Length: 224
Image (cartoon, helix red, strand yellow):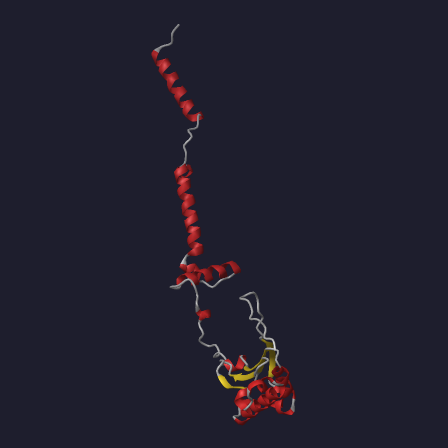
């Protein structure tokens, strides 16, 4: 037998009430939505970066090594130029030394089989004196002899001492060139008592004899 209309309406209302009481309604919170999470992450990262790299944070005194490095970075960026060129300036440096302090005087002895030349120059290569055996009276074949070179060496030393150059010289470089008789004669003069004024100032001995390498054909040797 079918139920009455009132009985059916009451049963429907009761079933609706039980469904609403027992079945939970799932509601997603607004903060758990994807867009909200992304906004939250971005805001958190921005606040974290601001707390680290903000100018106010750079002005605070550093409490650790990491803070010290951050403050140094901000100090460098706050300047107009990121590159500090103060070390390249020459404000408080000492003046550079003169040429005479690190470059010696030079005594050039050029001897070949026909003549001997002796020159003395300043550190900047300006000539003080330059003479050969022909300037002191030796003529023709006598200019290439041992005696002529020895006399020339003694005369050059006398001229240098007379003008007071040994007192001005602190260092002297002896430059030898050629293998004539005047080479040995000039060395004898420097080893003699007359050469004592310059012998103690010699710091370097150099051989600048030219060495022929390839080039044109040599002249036919002279035969006597």
